[in-house]
Image (tube, rainbow, N blue to C red; front, side, top):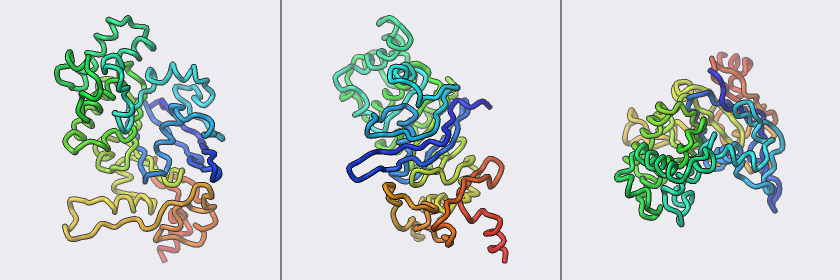
Length: 331
């Protein structure tokens, strides 16, 4: 299947008073047409910076795209001007943000906000754009859309605001949709409805989705492949089955062990990952997970493992997968 997005050797830094924060350190991944890819990891691992780098939403300065390529439909987004990116954002690439209350304009009616991108990107008249906005609200399951289209965001509930945000993001039928923690602020029943809605809309439109989350239950429900990030790097990537049933990196195993499971004894405590992520102003020279890893070896301290294939289409950056380590374990 053809790739719609390819991120190649991306390095992103922030220049702060404290020094250079190396937020993204050489990541590589791709998204195929019609595929849903999850990016998971702890807070501060670089998930949202990756998404915002694709959309070019972080101003420079303070951000510095030090090297790499973000290829979308064969074009490098890092070489695009702001004017060129304005044509792509909302039209070819849509984004659902974590908090719709801060993403929707409180001074504009919801229907106007949906219509705005249709007028700008697709050259529709105001009447045509209003009609399409109405259809978009119907599509995302908002009740009484003919009334709601003329209301302001504060008149919507949290779940309805998130639906309206999805309607804004999907109005122009983008080829790629980036959802940055789209259900974090919602209760569980509304969360399930939003995820079902995203899956249904994907089936209808064929849109590729990048889902950024730390909720592994959402990943299992929604995604085809998973990218696990830690300290600005990708430490493991593979299919849902690979990651959930055959994880090869200690950090991935730690994430899975820290989540409650149905087959667990109710008195069994969850197993947290001890310690904290490294300081990215002075990142470690070896494996970034070394200080927190129960399987750490001396080589992990001073030599960074490469992301290497450990199964068909599954990649892991861990010295435990090296043939020499496997031989030692066998003895």
